[in-house]
Length: 168
Image 1 (cartoon, rainbow, N blue to C red):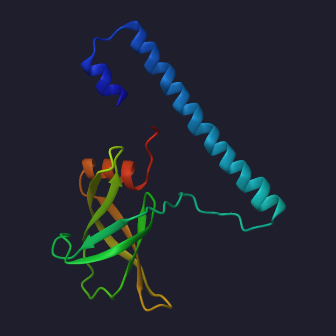
Image 2: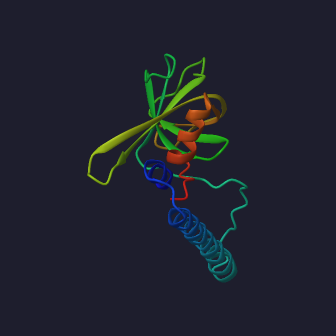
Image 3: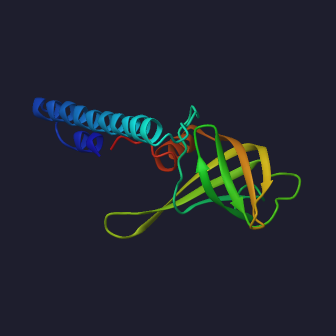
């Protein structure tokens, strides 16, 4: 949003200073938020309550309303719920077992509610290899898939909308 505003308006020293100031505030906000979360996790959960300390290197994201479409070139012959995702792999939960051969192409899909109340759908196409398959107690199937975005643009969409790595 800031970049687009600067492109459309004439650049002035005021706008440059404003962008630098806003960037500093956003970085400070994100840093303080991460510091508070990590402090709470280490001091309260691990130190006081003696809960298990997470040893994963990559943070798990639990997107809400995320879908994984697969089969027939990833266009949705099958659909599963996107449960967890990180930079290397995702976990999808499906009502039925995915028969061999396991699909190689997946489409992530998420619906986002905009400020005006309308829904906007974001999709990202990825390729992947099955890492683990498991049947759950309720008769559903969990699949852990190591994925690679098909293009840099799809990588950007995964990064921004599914991993929620945007600063603003």
